[in-house]
Amino acid sequence: MTRETLLPAMAAHVLEHGIAGVSLRPLAKAAGTSDRMLIYHFGNRQGAIDALLDYLAKLYETGLEAALPAKRARNRRETVRQILEVTAADELKPFMRLWWDVVAAAASGDETFRKSAASTMGLLLDWLEAHMPEDDPDPRGGARLLLTFIEGSQMLDAVGRADIAEAGLAALEG
Image (cartoon, rainbow, N blue to C red):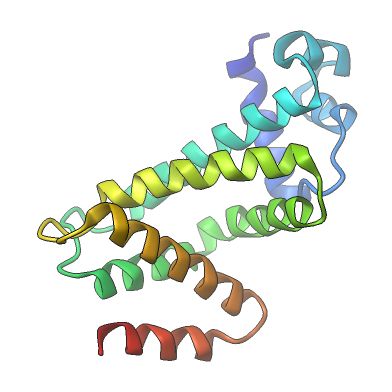
């Protein structure tokens, strides 16, 4: 077994069961190995969580790439609209549930998840910057603005207030 063969099974497990309070034993069981082997391959729980969330972020990115139109959006508002529509699709919902587990653990002070979530945000920010409209005057700053808006919109949707996010999106253009 290698890290690369362990990660898909571990990812499937957390996408189905969540990651809050996860320990090495259930991850090892899902991967058909022992917690000692996970320590051998990843060093410790932090290493396993970091590698797992990095792997999941790349799967998420692949899902976004496959679902988004090949042509870039014309403006920032259209970029946000496309991403929000894609991330609301059934095939990406497990990633969104998992993301909120990670955010909740980070917010409660779990340093393992805080570090991994920060790294994941960096990956998403880089991805978004590369997908900004071609004529965007400030892709770096725009990506930061849109990531803030997208994350806030997804949180509002998760708590049943998509109406606020929709109003914000309408105001973004105006």
